[in-house]
Length: 237
Image 1 (cartoon, helix red, strand yellow):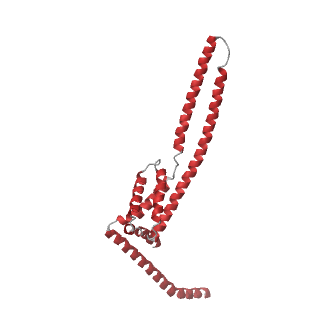
Image 2 (cartoon, helix red, strand yellow; image 1 turned 60 degrees about the horizontal axis):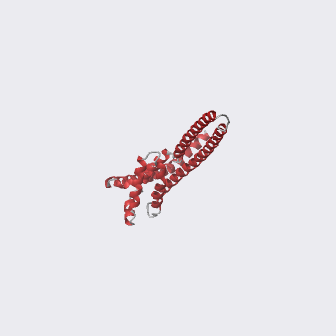
């Protein structure tokens, strides 16, 4: 029964959130958090990283309302820690990727410089005017091709860098936290009859747990002596 009781307690712990926040003039905290969770639910993978810091801030604000149900605060704190871990992991991955991109860019820059230097030495050969003009045109074409290739390479690097600059997050973990937070915030929107039913279920489960403890105690007290006597008889046989 204990796992079931814990699940029902988690559902119930958020039922009084609107009333408590409204009494303190902080009802906007809940509505803002729900809006962020809805946007996060429908967001693409590229948009998610920029939304997480806002979500962290909103959860942290709600944690400052210490008069909320202790179980609710505990679940909010766990969600905050999970989000913090997700953001930190994404930043670590982004840092590693950016280091790799810088090394790649430096290699491309050195290669481009060597190619340009080779073209310059080729254009300085002597000869008659017609030969010089031909070589000059050829050298200019080579430099133009080299420049175009360099620009294409730099353009590709910029596009790759723009992609890398967006940190990659674990979407499964993000969705799991989003669902937990949404459940905590939206249970208070259930109909009053359903909320009353949840409270009644919790009361019934607790009563059942107490009955089980009492029954187990009686069974143990009544059977221990009998079982011990039977064991002695078996040993003496």
